[in-house]
Image 1 (cartoon, rainbow, N blue to C red):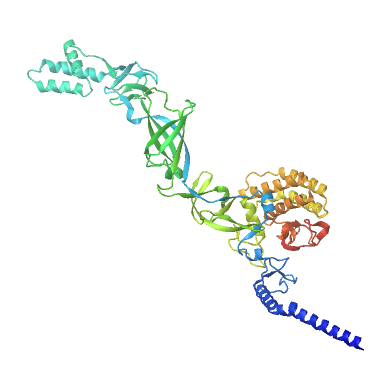
Image 2 (tube, rainbow, N blue to C red):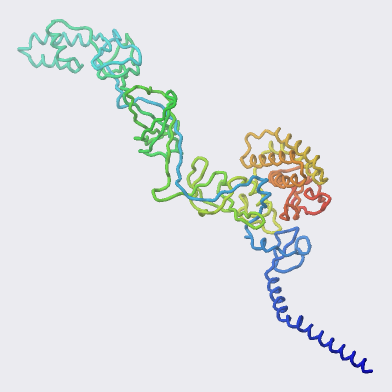
Length: 571
C-alpha cells in the first residue's frame, strides 16, 4: 500500500514537472509568436498578386484572374519593385540577340566634313588681252594654249585700214600745223586713243608715209589659257584675243551643299590631297565662301588661295578635302551617342535605357531631342543624363520585345493596358509579303520539330528555312524590315548548327519575336495565331506563331505540351 502511494506521488511530481517545463518552453514565446504573426500580416498587406498566364494583371490581394479565372500567385519582390514602364530581358536573351550597351558621357563634339573640289585659276591674276586697234589679224605669233608669254611680247600682227586713214590725216595735218596746230594735235590724239605710242607716231612722221601693219603686245606676263581669235578674223576695237593667267597663285574651289553650309566658315582649316601628287597632304584656310547658291547645282563655293611657285598644281586638277569642326563651345562639352542607338519614327527620336536587375536587365523607352549629325553619331540636346546606360546594338530587337510585352515602344509611345493588343506597326510592301510567306511556312515546320523535341529535325528545318530566306530579294525595303530579317537569319543559322535542344529553343525565342513583328503587319488567307507561354524563357514568357489554335508548346514539348494561350489572331 505504501509502495502504491509512493508511486502515485512520484507520477504526480513528474506530471507537474512536465507541465512546468512545457510552460517554460512554449508558453513564454506567446508574445514573440504574436509579433511574428503581426509582422507576417503586415508583409502580406504589401504583396502584389499576379496571374502566371497574364503577367500584366496586378492586384493587392489573392483571388482569380479577371481574364482567364486562374488563381493569382504572389509576385516576387524583385518583379514587384520593377518600374511598371520597364520590361526585363534575361542575360541569356541579351546574348542571343547580340544586344550591347554603352554608358553615356560628354566630350568634345567634332564633325568631319569631306569636300570635293578643283584647282582653278585665280581670277585676280587672269587677264583678257584685247586689241585696241580695229582690223584683220594677219599673223598670230602665239597660237596655242599653255604657251608662256612675257609682258611686251608681240602676240599678233593686225592690218588696220582705219589706222592707215588716221595716219594720212596726221601727215596732212603736219603740213599745216603752223597755221592749224589744233588740227595737228587732234590727229595725234586720235592715234593715241588706239594706244599707239608717241614713239610710233614720231616714226610715222619721220617716214612720211603710213604704217599698214601693227603689233598687239602682251600687257602682262603669264600663260595663255585660252585663244579667243584666229588668224584672218576681223576684230573691232576692244575685242578679246587671248586669256593670260599668272599661275604662281591659284585657287582651290570646294563644293558646299546646302546641308554643309553650317559646318564651314571663313577661317576654317582644310586638309586636302591632290590625286596627281600622291603621298602628300596639304593644309589651307578658307578665305571666302560664296554668298550665293548655284540655282542649278544647289551648291556654293568655298575658296582656298595657295602658292604655286613650283607649278606643281595645274588648273583643273581634282582635290579632296577634310574639314574638322569642333561644334562645342570653348568651355562646354556635348553628349554624343551612336546612330545605331536611336530609333527615329519621323516625329520622335527614342532610345532604350538599361537598368540592371537581379535576374536580368530592365529596359525603358526614353524620348530624346537630337542635335546635329556627326557622321555615325548624333549630338543629344535633351533627354539623357551623363552616366546613363543605353542600348547601342540590337535596338530593334529590344523594341520588338517591348511591343510583345505591351510596354511603351517606338510606334506605341504609351504602355499597352491589360486586354489591349500591342501592335508592331510597319509598312510591309506586297511584294515582300509574297516572298515572306514561304519562309513562314518553313518556320511552322521548325516549330513542329521543337514541339516533338526532335533536335535533328529542328536543325534540318532551320537550315531549309534559312535557304528559303536567302532567296528573297531584299532590295528597296526599309531599314526596320532589314534589321528584323538579319536577326531572323542569324537565329536560323544558330539553330541549324546547334546540337542542344535547349539552346535551339533559346534561339527560337528571338527568332519568333522577329517573325511576329513582321507577320503582325501582314494579311493571310488563313488565320495565324500568336501564342504565349508564361513559363518559357526562365518564367519571363515567350511567344511563337502557329497555324492551329490548339496550344502545342515548342519550348517544353511533351513536358508541358498545352501550357500557353492564344494572344492574338492575324487574319
